[in-house]
Image (cartoon, rainbow, N blue to C red):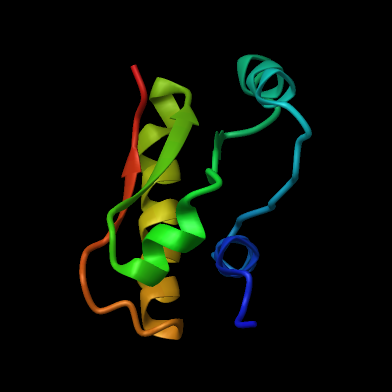
Length: 101
């Protein structure tokens, strides 16, 4: 078996400058932290992430953030995606952060 790509993405994200990564058991908990401005934002890595990346099928990473932090948070996520693609030889644009409505 190869690397757990979800865990590897989180590891790469945690290496971004001025970034702290926390794992929450529920989206509700993360949403409460976000609403209380305790965190800048959070992402959800779905069950299909690893399969999609491995199969070169687009993988979407829902990104939740306050409007004021959207640009800074989005840059951190995009930088992590770029580093992940280099580390795991993902040569196409198959990983996309999205802002759910």
